[in-house]
Image (cartoon, rainbow, N blue to C red; front, side, top):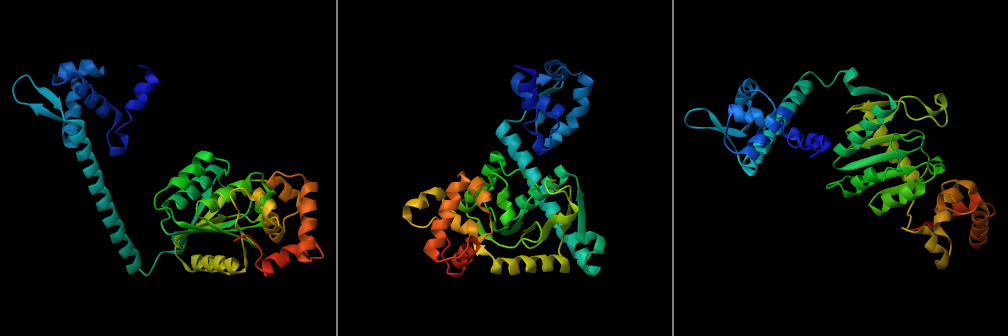
Length: 337
């Protein structure tokens, strides 16, 4: 058995509070059967003194017990029982932690609410911002409100993360407002189409700032404005906002923008619509104010093909310009439903 495989095995119980050394001793005892300190030390490559020092902890974890008689012999607890004991212990610890959190929250309330420095949290570094956003998203249970605008804190092409989001049990409802600039990045339309298929409610509209709000309890937004950041640079710092009047204002901003935005409903394969009348996907992107070149990149078409479709749409709608076509589509509720 390779060292890499052994190292992976030794981490099986780490999430239940068992160290690598403790798990190594327990698994050696499982393989060997009842053993003396010397036998177990030989099995683990450790010393009898080290095993003796570990005994109280192993017994406290419920992983081993002592056999009556002399010399001292140890026996392992059957795995199904041992794991149940460890899980029950961890659940009890989590219950106590939640109770402690509730108690601490009452102490904050008793003093008249959080101090200003507790309302705002500054996160610095591209990786740190991405981790904080994913943490906020994973902890949400009711609703995620998102204003989508480049650059992005997380990699939208990460299929593994996208599948994890889609498969998450109890995932919150997501409402997203997409800026026309959001679709300048290749692959963004396909990413959005998958998100809508997974239940996201998406609209196109004005996005003055990147923003994500989880359960109306926590928000994250860039610390530096677009004007002060290079066009293609990633988000290097972010502001996390906790319950406060500022958070209430951010939620209110999203709701105002949501009411003014245009519904974006993309089919699993938008190109199929060409056979059934006006190209609704092109129409939706026109309504978002996207240019022909950007539409072509997102749909995998040539700019000339997009220009031809736009011309047909303008004729069908009686529009004077491509922008007029997008306005008429939104005004007359002609976007895909």
